Image (cartoon, rainbow, N blue to C red; front, side):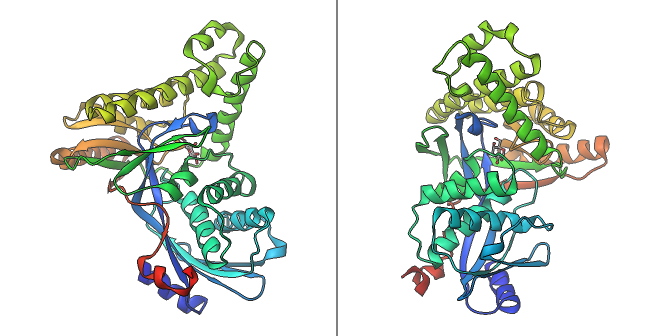
Amino acid sequence: MIQKIRAIFHERLGGEPFMVRSPGRVNLIGEHTDYNEGFVLPATIDKSIILAVAPRNDDLCRMYSADFDQSFETTLDSLGRSELKWPDYLLGVVDQLLKYGAALRGFDVAFGGNIPIASGLSSSAAIEAGLAFALNTIFHLQIDTLTLVKLAHMAENEFVGVRCGIMDQFVNLFGKEHRLLRLDCRSLEFEYVPFERSDIRIVLCDTQVKRELASTEYNIRRQQCETGVTVLQKHYGSIHSLRDVSLDTLQRHREEFDPTVYRRCEYVICENARVLEACNDLRRADLSEFGRKMFESHTGLRDNYEVSCSELDLFVEIASHVPGVLGARMMGAGFGGCTINLVEESRIQEFGRIVTETYRKQFGKDVAFYIMNIKSGTAAERQEKVRSYQM
Ligand code: GLA
């Protein structure tokens, strides 16, 4: 894929690019908790976007998406949202870097990869954080990694218009091989948690339902959580986010809540507690208990947070009956995309067969399976490290 994107760059844009691999991510547990200042447990994977980027001497920005076979160009002083949509993920980063005061010039970029789009594997953060990393390198901006995370995150919030949390951009730039990353989304302190059981694999089942509702409903969920916080703030001035609320406190004020808002808050509070307990399970190498919490997480996402769909529910339901599946739940924003499953290596085939047959029978659709390996976060392609861009 590296060679392919490099060749496309040569052909379409010309010159010698700096090559970056920017991965997608999985999230083991801790869904819709990041924008509530809670905890998440993601990891970067071996599905990536490859970006080929080179600086220019004028302020033209030329972009080519290999997956869409589309080009787009603009100048640094006329950034605006594009009808093609995909350029917004790149333009948003440029916009943030300029606001930050970075000394940017124009650039050429060609990119493409194998992260399925709109499947909950965060291809958008891979584009944003990957470009932020590339521009930081080729223009010698010397911006530290945490600031790059924040700029990429703001690009999605302000330019693309999805008020996402910081999980995806954070893990994209800080992810590490064979490690999950336990992130406190309030303090941004993090810890690497080993995940090295070769007999148990992370398997994604892709419903191939594209998450059309996701961005609108996502912003609505976020709003509902904020409404819940406002209700409690009348009583407790110290509450800043749902992170500060115990289940007890929530229950005590139940009658003051709109029932939907109440269920949203209940889910978030329970999920936060689950992430912390699940990390303890991992430390004790108790993957059965960890898996049980994944199922609980799905139940909360389905019934209280209401971000699942019948295809995802079916996959989790099947997983709960197949021997050797330790845990399963929907992953990412929801309304389609993938479930994440922990499956004993020897049972993967059997699991795949049952899901495929049942899905076909009930929905007349095909499922796509991905067996994931945990790889490092965004980085220059190895041979690039010796290139002059790094000097
Ligand atoms: C999307 C967002 C993340 C996070 C998840 C849900 O992936 O980009 O910030 O909120 O949904 O956990």
